[in-house]
Each structure stands twice: as structure tokens, then as C-alpha cells.
Image 1 (spheres, rainbow, N blue to C red):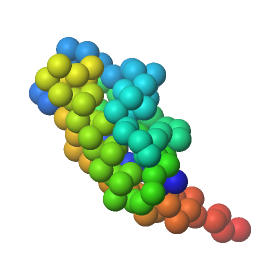
Image 2 (spheres, rainbow, N blue to C red; image 1 turned 90 degrees about the horizontal axis):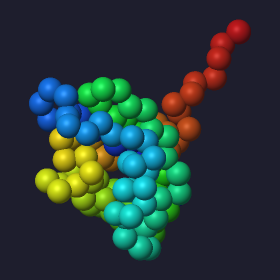
Image 3 (cartoon, helix red, strand yellow; image 1 turned 90 degrees about the vertical axis):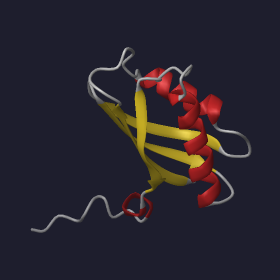
Image 4 (cartoon, rainbow, N blue to C red; image 1 turned 45 degrees about the vertical axis):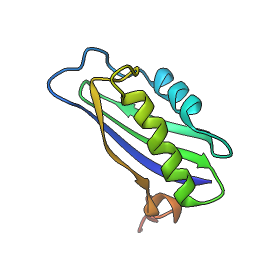
Length: 107
């Protein structure tokens, strides 16, 4: 399983359709082609941006990143559910993969 960070932003001003967490998750599940598949996703959205960490089951990191980029491309296409948005980042997150996003606390 690979942790992939995704960042979407509104192309200009407010988009016509704001992303909805359930719609984004469903679109990514549909867009990922086998053998890569969505395991789970953490999504945080605001009026003009969406950040997610998507966990993808795949044979390799490159397959996971490529598959997720294509799934995002389908969502963001002119006739896609999120056509007013653009993909700014879709890449593996080494901090999450290595468990370094939470540092131990010091007394």
C-alpha cells in the first residue's frame, strides 16, 4: 500500500461545483484501474482547495502514482465531476510512508 498526497485547487475564482468528499472518493475508486485500487483516503476540503492522502494498493509505487493521476484526470476533465478544478500535486509522501509525520513528543 502506498500513501499518495493529492492537492486540488480551483482554476480561477470559485468553481461551479465544489468537491464533495464522497464524490471525490467514489470518482477515485472508479478511475483507478486494476490491479491498483483505492484502500482508503483522508480528505480535507475548503472552498477553493482540496487536500487528500490516498492509500492505494498497487504492485509498485509508480503504478500507484500513475493510476491515481489518471483517476484524478478523469475527475478534472472538461466533462468530469470536478471540471472547475486542477491537479497541483499527486505524488508519494515519504513522510507518511516512513511514519515521520508524527514526531515523538519530548518531556
